[in-house]
Length: 320
Image (tube, rainbow, N blue to C red; front, side):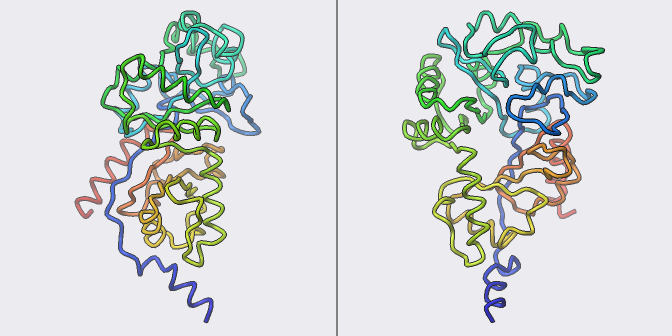
């Protein structure tokens, strides 16, 4: 009897089918994929590049433009403050891996960082060839450059440090450059700067990786009872594609609960079969996105997933 009650409480077919619209979140934009085996946060990934399939370097204006053209609704970018009160868009904690420079990124001036070649360190054959060397000279943009070049587009800005004060620096920087802090400015990262950002911008969209993990695990523990963990209310929950059927109420019942609790659902890739990439890289995986899904689809290959999703969304709208 208890099993039956749990089944019906979580039966997807008894819940209304969602009628929302998914948004594509392009992680790093169009970039060079790399071997993710045994990597950690300090691993140099430029020298682990897989054979290139596109001409773009992540976190550069050409890559960003191409990502939106490919269908991205939101673009994830990485930022660091500089010693001259600027913010630069660059992934790594140090500049040693991707560029010809050396040192901690945030210990440099914007002028120096913009003089570097961001394609310098990329190699797919152990250093025999460097296909992007010389092609990224002067292409590391400031955050203001990016936001002003794409004034109508939405960005998910990644705090790369645990420094609480970085949230205040970012707010001051945006105001100084005349950039309105509205719903096109989203942030995520470590809990400390994210908490501070939410305190000074309570209406904005922000989440920490820790908060998403907590909500996801808490829901897996108690979702069977129809109870929603307090950690999920107004927060973010991640659903890896290969674990979606283990999520209580997936898809309709689950999505209905998340809507009622103002919880943003992020649909993630198959981390076991996509070399650890957090986002979807195989367009065929889009078949697993339920009709009416109104969350975020996280992708690490927007150049492939974007056009495929545009086609699939059109087919669904047309009843194909």
